[in-house]
Image (cartoon, rainbow over all chains, first blue to last red):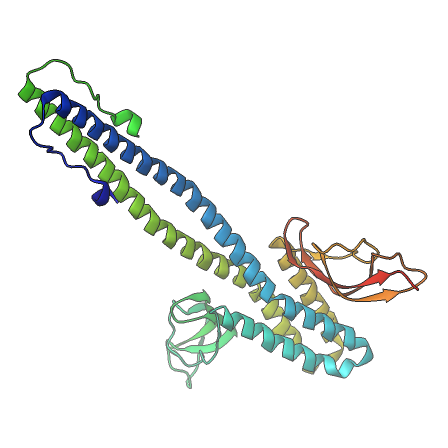
Length: 167
Length: 167
């Protein structure tokens, strides 16, 4: 924007009075342009702060609302529990699957198949160790609590028991 | 900032050459100040766009991670279901309460006690109507699906059956 509005500093050989008036106008123009840009910057700062707050609020509502169908189905399963107690396990399993899908859609799939992998603090949190002849030291022996997230963004590392060398 | 650095447009009665040099410097200073402010504005625009994206990502992760304990407990209830089928209803009820607490903590409490209230499209979504001598026309006769949110921020309106005048 400064490029377009840039005035010419040298204006040539008019009379001294004309030249002085030109220069004064030129300075005024420059000052005004600068002031406008400074005001724009100031407004933008304020707007940006609001944009960040609004983005958070929108995201919070968007993510929270994805869980409402899960809650609805959980309630439905509970309502049917009294009339048909055998079906509740089936219903709750379906709700659990639905919840996993919500998390995966948000970019946080459940991280399965960690057992047997080399322990990696980026993906695993060691809660204890276990020694065993059939275990490879330094690998995940058991997953206590599953981890969630993609390789690039871990929401929660898996809580694991790490295999150690048997004495 | 323009106020502090503002140069004096009239610089008095020095020699014409000195005056011209002063004015040229003054114009250069002004142009530089303007350019700096414009560059700052440009940088700020880019940073703001990044800030908004990061705010969304942080909020998404923050909200999603609140549901992990709910999922953990749902899994626990299912694991215990085979060994102790009677307890699953109790376990799932506790998970349901936990989920309601997560939503309330996020600012979206479940909206109970809507039955009997005047129908209000801000909080209610009418799915059908019902006539009955014991019902007050224009009020909520039944809640089919609960609404969530505060008075100022509704996440989802309640799906309701509205009472109408009986013929």
